[in-house]
Image (cartoon, rainbow, N blue to C red; front, side):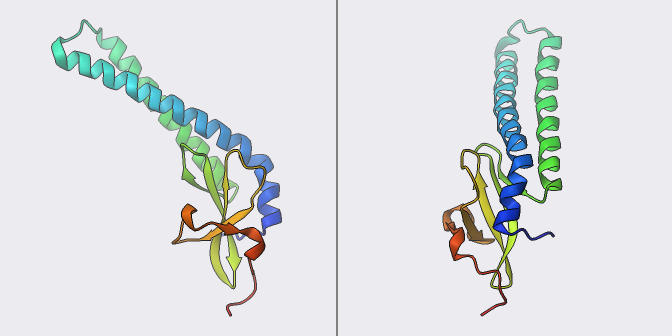
Amino acid sequence: MRHFTPEEANAELVHVRPLVEQLVERRRAHVEALARQEELEHRIRGNGGGIPPAQLAGAAADVEAEARSIARLVDEINEHGAQVKDLDEGLIDFPTLHRGETVLLCWRLGEDEIEWWHAVEDGFSGRRPVEELDPGPPK
C-alpha cells in the first residue's frame, strides 16, 4: 500500500477528480436504470402490463452496463492509490501516516483539496484537519 503525503494526494486529485465526477454520474444513472427496471418488473408482476420482453431485457442491460462502468471507474481510481468510500457522494481516501500508523486522507467531490484525515476505524465522522497530521514515529 502506498502512503501519500497531503501534497502528493492533492497532486493526484488532478487525475482522480474527473474519475470521481464520472463515478458519481454513473452511480446516478445506475440508480435511475434500476428504478426503470424495477418499475417494469412491478408492472409485469401486476398483470403483465403489456411489456414486451425486449423492453425488460433492455432495462436489465442498461443496469448491467452502468454497473460495469462503475466497476471500471472504481478500478481506475484504485490504480491511482485512492480508495472509494461512497459512490453517491464521491468520497475517497488516500492512505497516509500519522505517528507511524496508517490513517486516511479524506476528500469528497466538491472540495477544492484534501484538508481532512481520519483514523481507519473512525471514518468520515472522525475527520480532523490535515494540519494535525504527524507522519513521524509512534509517540
